[in-house]
Length: 220
Ligand code: ADP
Image 1 (cartoon, rainbow, N blue to C red):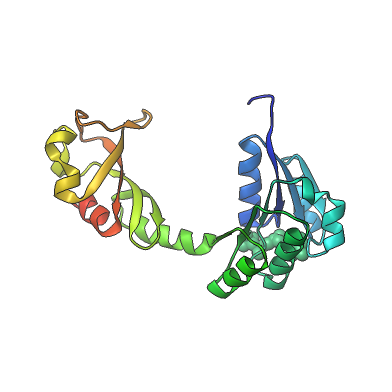
Image 2 (cartoon, rainbow, N blue to C red; image 1 turned 90 degrees about the vertical axis):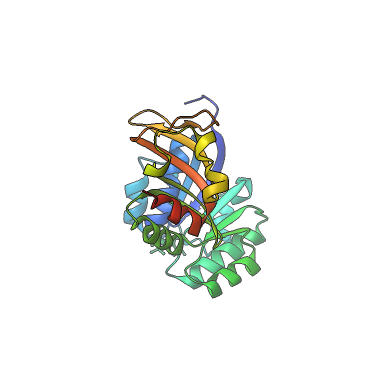
């Protein structure tokens, strides 16, 4: 890791979602201040984050005393207690933060968060639910949807294109998907180019409309 730390991030709520966000940011080299009202969670995360505090983050003065104005970004990962989530976002926004990410549990919650100052609202449960539904199609190994129609997916190379270079299988024209990267066995992914020859043990990363990716993954 480089000596220079990336920008500090405040993560409020160290439940399953907030905990994962905080630990990933810390691994990426950010300084993370994790805050939660539960003493047990604060203790659990203390050895793993730059700093942790036990605090009720709906309290404007408490946030001020933590020096939140100095943070370029905050993640409000309180989902169940909607009132606490909204009041925390409002307090951060009142203190001048302009990069506030907040977790929403439903559309109404999201609308209130946006009105109170959240700049990015995420729906982790919904997103993961959609993802699992697509992954139940066992040919898809990973899936990220963008809106209702478009996605990027990792999948086993369909038999129909095995043994051919991509220029010949012409996936974009014939199947309406773009092969972005390929990976053989335990090797890393590399960019796909027209000459890339597809072997039976290849995994592909493709982009396209969801329906087209599903059709492409089922080709024999
Ligand atoms: P998850 O499903 O990701 O675990 P929860 O909404 O259940 O999400 O957890 C949110 C976390 O936020 C909990 O650990 C809870 O203690 C914490 N939390 C709730 N209210 C506050 C608050 N006012 N200030 C700080 N942390 C809070």
